Amino acid sequence: MATQWGRKETIIWPPYAPILSYSAVGLALLLTCFFAWQHFRFSLTTLQQSYSGAYVRSLAMAPFHMRSNYRLLYLGGGKAATRLALPIDFTEGQTQLPDGRTVPVVLSELATAQGFRYFYRGPEEKLSDASVNRWLRGAIFEGKSLVGLYAVSLLEGAFCLAAMLFFTIPRDIKRLKQLKYGRLLRGPVMLTPEEFNKAQGGDGIGFKTTELGKMMRIPKRKEAQHFEIMGDTGVGKTQLIMQILRQIRERGDSAIVYRPASTCSAFTMRNVKILSSTRWTPAAPIGGPRARWNRTPRPTPSPHRSINRRPTPRTSSSTRRPRKSSPTY
Image (tube, rainbow, N blue to C red):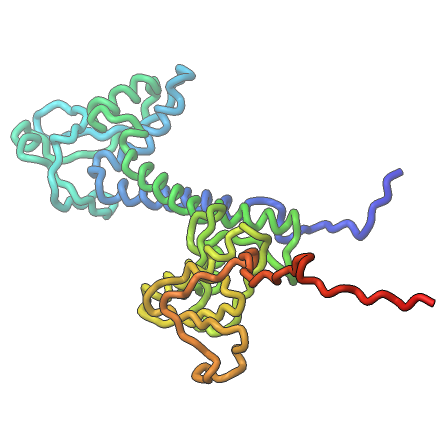
């Protein structure tokens, strides 16, 4: 039987879910509804606004071949026969209805010339949903479907959703990684050059390697502190030093290179002074008698160079002194 450690939580907060992305989707839906209401309120005509509910209902019920109750708008008055109202029968104006409401339309000159005096909503009629939908789409909504009618609002909502997901998805990924792997409280952190520059405020001397590809900079206020470059032979320590000296030269500053072992013979550039002395140390005064400033360093003699010495002459056998013989008794 598996052992369960710790207590069982009934409510886990924050949840293990991309809540920022979910919030972005919800906010995008609210914005889409707002854009649709704005289009309905300021872009549709009064007759289209009046028939919008019937248009949505007929569109939803048309595939089921059903009949529903509808109240349509009619024109009446005078000797002309009553007929259905069309968009050309109205123009902008103010008309007061019998129930006291005011609508921002009046009958057009064409409708008045035909003998109509007023418009009204007829009683409920049981009509085919498919027939009503075809008539509303062709006569009232200019042949546009419901999606085509609110296409601008949908595009605006999709743009808002894409813009918000662009910012929320990376944050959700970072948050889920922290929930899975934990959060580092102490110790080093592996960062990219962009993250390092942003975290440290890097605006000073930088380092560029083939692995990173971009410059990793340190804050300018910390340039007076020490740099420690360590590595095996041939890994690029001298190249990093050359990068520092080139940046110093480009900024117009000066640099001092202290080389007691004469290992920096490649540094021959303007504004860079090389101090070559085996007896001088950084703690001693620079202007002392033992320090020597060289703009162009001299090559270091090879330690394997042969030393010519004067050979010691050998004595020949003719010039040797005779050895004294011991006395014989």
